[in-house]
Length: 128
Image 1 (tube, one colour):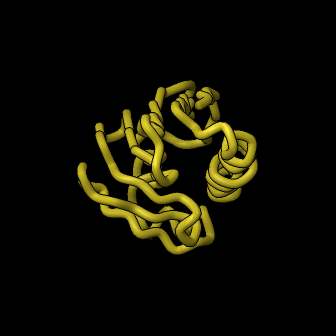
Image 2 (spheres, helix red, strand yellow):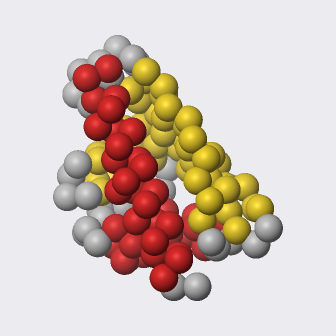
């Protein structure tokens, strides 16, 4: 199991970024894919045509999102924590993803950088 941590800057407020990450219609706008996502703790979700599936563990409006991502049978839960920090009229997203299966690590890191966060950044770059 491996962990990944990185900061990303988004050209919007933490409240707007939070909505972009928790509202299924907005997720679809920036990701280009249908999102099955209800922002309620304990519900399961699906993003990127089922490539990402998990459960919402914690939500703190405008500040924090914690999810468990499903990778099949594994001893420890794979947990994603997104902390939203205000930074000069922008948002710094602190991404922490722990307990990533070794065989999925490099693909997942590539997905975080070139798909998930890149698409979110492009959405705000084009719509500010």
